[in-house]
Amino acid sequence: MAEHDYTARVVWTGNRGEGTAHYGAYARSWNVETPGKPVIRCSNDPLLGGDPGLHNPEDMLIAALSACHMLWYLHFASDAGIAVAAYEDEPLAVGETDARGASRFLNATLRPRITVPKGTDLAAADALHGRIHDVCFIARSVNFPVRIAARYRVAG
Image 1 (tube, rainbow, N blue to C red):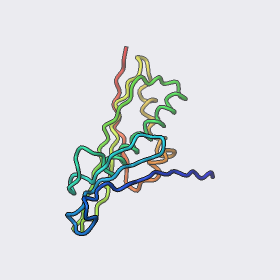
Image 2 (cartoon, helix red, strand yellow; image 1 turned 90 degrees about the vertical axis):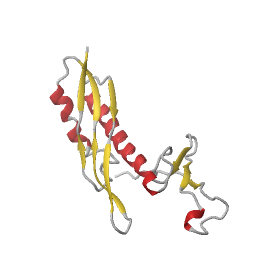
Image 3 (cartoon, rainbow, N blue to C red; image 1 turned 180 degrees about the horizontal axis):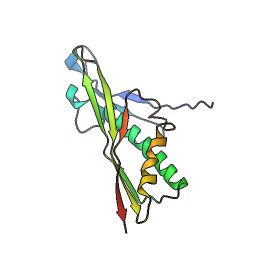
Image 4 (tube, helix red, strand yellow; image 1 turned 60 degrees about the horizontal axis):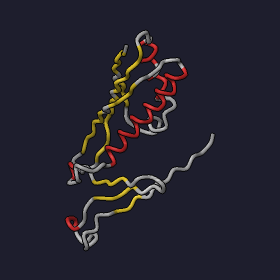
């Protein structure tokens, strides 16, 4: 086994002058500042008063899950001789909040739309999804079920 280190710099930007003197005194905003990469401005979930125009942790988790799945799908498709021309996903995650205010994801559905050339074996293309959860870093790390509802477009 080989270990990998990952790091990020998370900087709270929500001090309105009083710090956390009281609950309404501060904004739930921060930046992700990874050296050499663009800054990602973030906020709390809009359900909790965050800025709906900024990414929140829930957005980033479902996007990471989708991106990891996509990258492995493209890898497996290439190995299988399946020429993917386009791939886009609109994943859906379902969460819940209990009476104490604690939240969690219940499940996620990845909904990729994949464009392949005429003559592609769609059953073989679809079967690739079943192998990904065994290798995708993010999928192997989450503790909620992840379903795949792929759709295919045949071009040409």
